[in-house]
Image (cartoon, rainbow, N blue to C red; front, side, top):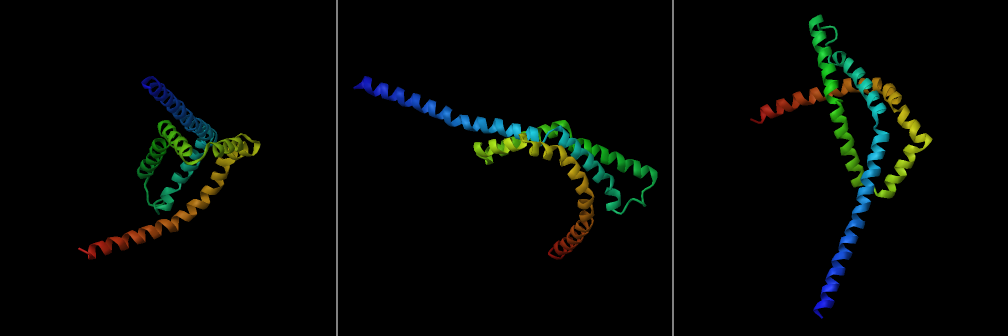
Length: 172
């Protein structure tokens, strides 16, 4: 009887080990597929486009802030350096690598393996490849429109911030 129970225990343990490795496999597959999706959809070409568009947006920052005609030559040089350094730090290779890892992890957690495989198939298709290839151009076209929307938005935020400061001061 002891021998039979021991065999059952060993078989049960073996089955649990096999089942846990089978169950762990889809997560590994999901992460691998998710990483491939991220590599295709958020590749270097896209980030170079983002870099160019962000640079364009930052170049318009002094005008948005109402400073373009108020800065002297030295101040303009400081502003340009600030924008260049900001762009370099925000879109550094280390940051982009970390961002890709975070997205791959998130995709693997949110989508099923079937959904991930379908998404990957789309990105591998001619239409998906065209989307990735053309995304920087679409972003370049949209950037001036988004910038134009930011001016009144920033004004509303400033007004709300001033009202909040007054309300907080009155609540003392």
